[in-house]
Image (tube, rainbow, N blue to C red; front, side, top):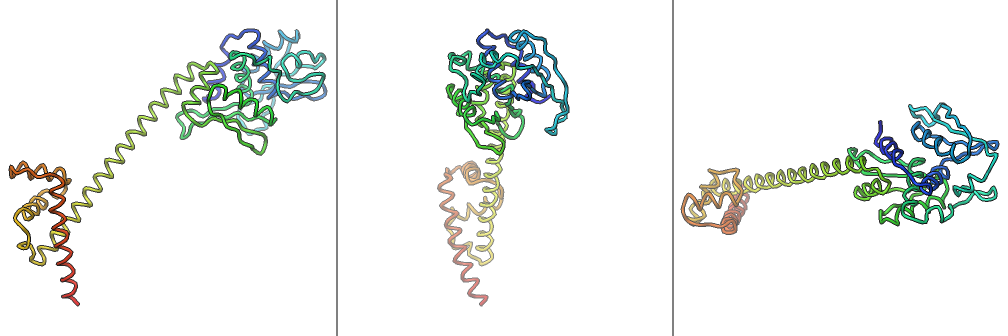
Length: 314
């Protein structure tokens, strides 16, 4: 079962007040309803959603409804659950803000979403109809709601952003996508809808991923530091080799000669580690900065000797 389906199934378990039922039905039906030959059709791959709608609708239109199973043309493995009812009375569609006097309303009446509870219920209905959300274990955090009508898409975006969730709107080929990318905002959106178990799961995975990414960054940083230490040590050993090859060892003072001796003995030590070793062995304190200064003298001498060496070869 996908994470989206788990979230939707959890949303169906919550008890709703009468105004919340109307708001959730409005959100779903406004974004799912098809009308053909005066018959209304609602569809979903999730049978639990259809059972929820059947229960709520039967109490509203006072008629027994059936759920039919049809072939899904969207290349999905799941069959399409279809709920239909005749539009012998349009008062129900007016009650949920779908139409008025037989004309489709591009935005629902504000009385349907005049409180936070009703706004949450409306968004819940919209998400049940058109929403999806990536499992936080995947490579990216993403929640989206695909909406056909542009004014409805803007309306839904505004409702979500009442709660500062930074929902954005994108024009797609077959409609409009209201989406959230930030992990914290997606978690807050789930909390807003009332999907408590989904929030707990989402947060557990998000914290684990953040910790894993942090550990990986530390390991990468540590490896980069190791590579840098080795590169520096190899360069210093190269300079020492040039000096010895050109019999320039006696051109150095005793302290610098001492550094060469310890560098050759401790080839993989960092400057900090080498400074600590020399200080311990000689009982004469030397800082990393002081050690670096002596290696600069070694480098300068090696470069001079190498130039003379190149001239001699010519």
